[in-house]
Length: 199
Image (cartoon, rainbow, N blue to C red; front, top):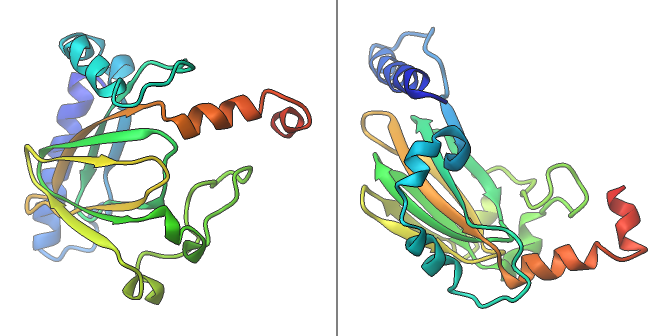
């Protein structure tokens, strides 16, 4: 997404906001974009102090880390959601513009969410809708992120996010970096018979 496309995204988000307020049925329901900043905006990525990324990625000392931290931008219009899922990486999530509601759940409750298995195309994602009754029984942590707020999501913690901005636009940035769980899993699949599952 270049400069023009980003401007168009913001303009469309504003138009959707006005459209919904006028109760017009022709409004675009959702706007969503995510991407690796180093690929979509290399000049912007170059302004991020490498010392910052090194400090974040050294929170867990792993000799086998093979991947540099990944910095993503997330842009979404009103009510855009990220389905319940978990990541294998450490996740430092920062809200830049607008607001977003985050819900978190300990990995102790992984089975209750009926998560797709590892080799499934939707692996790490829950099969349950966000309004499933089970969520009223589980100890869900709910947080409202506003500009300047940062949230650390540990590996394997289930989470769900929804844009709640009043002007229908949210911009966030996050940093993913390797965890011990991720490194161990990647090493397991190097050896037979596990490797055959990936071929």
